[in-house]
Image 1 (cartoon, rainbow, N blue to C red):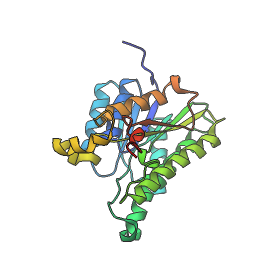
Image 2: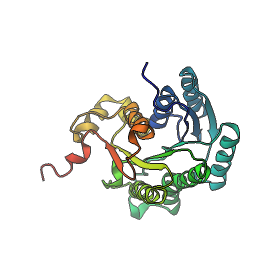
Image 3: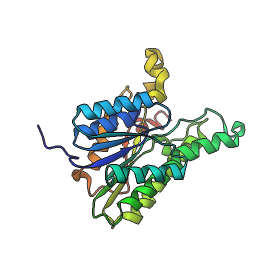
Length: 260
C-alpha cells in the first residue's frame, strides 16, 4: 500500500453528511486523516460518514453545527481542540442552492439565508481555523468549495452566484493574508456533480441526459472526483499551490460561447 498522504492530520469537513462533503471526509480518512464531520439536519448521513471513516481505521467525530452562527462555530473549534487537538485541514463544503427566484421576486430572507450560509458561514470557519492554528507551528490547509457559478451567472440564482463569487474572493484575499503563516488556501469550483443538490437528475435518466448536454464530456462528476482534488490540495504535493481555483467541470466553462 502506498504511503498515506494525510497521515496524522486532523480535518474538519463541513456538510459531510452527504455529497461532496461525505466523499471528501471518507477520502481524507483513507489517506490517513482523522475527520470532524459537521452537519445541520441529517444526523443519519453524518453517522454513515463516521462509520466509513472508522472502517478506514481513522477517528471520526460528529458535530451538529450551524455555520450561520459565529458563536456556534467558535464553540465547535473549542470543543475540537480540547477533545481531538488542533485541526490542520478545513474544507468549507456546506451550502445551499439558488432559490430559482429572480431578483425582483426575492425576499430579504431569501437573500440573507443564501449569503449567510454560503459566504458568511465559511468566513466564520476560516477565521476560527486561522486563529486556532496560529502559533502552533503546524502547516494548515483551507479548501473552499465554490462553483463554476463563481464565474457563470445563472438566472434565478443571484444570491447563490454572489455567494460563490464572494467565497472565491474571500479565498484569494485570505491567501494573501496568511501566505507567510504556513497555511495554504485554495478553491475547488465544481460543475455539475451527482449530489442531492441535483437529485432530480439522479432520479431521472432523461433529466440527467438533458442536463449534461452543455458539458463537453457529456456526464456529471461523481462526488469522489471532487474529493480526489481536495486530497491533493491538502497534501504535501500541493504546498506551492496557493490562492487559486481548480475548476472540475468536464470542460463546461469552455462550452460557453460555442456557436455564437
